[in-house]
Length: 82
Image 1 (cartoon, rainbow, N blue to C red):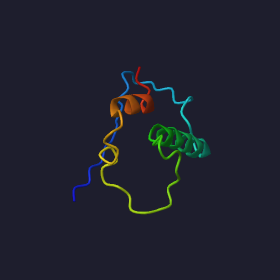
Image 2 (cartoon, rainbow, N blue to C red; image 1 turned 60 degrees about the vertical axis):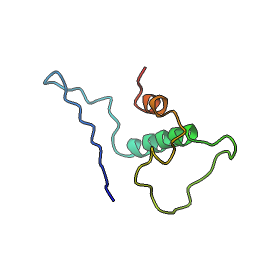
Image 3 (spheres, rainbow, N blue to C red; image 1 turned 90 degrees about the vertical axis):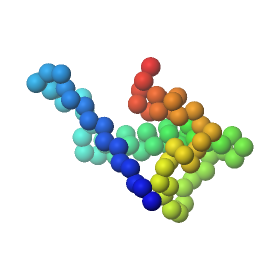
Image 4 (cartoon, helix red, strand yellow; image 1 turned 135 degrees about the vertical axis):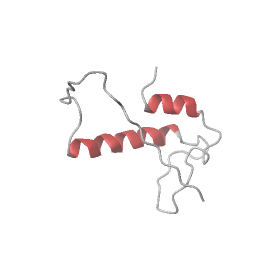
């Protein structure tokens, strides 16, 4: 079994970075929950409707678990690509 990790690193073009707009502390948990809910909504099977995770074994390759989804669109929405 191969486990891959992805790290997104952003290098600023200027030395001075304004971080006032970034979320901090408890704000992060709320934002992450909303983003996770948005992703879940994009993966809903119209034949089944909304379902809730109840534990189980995490999948190794999330994207391969949903091969019939339009991942270019989903990832574009998640990463706010136009």
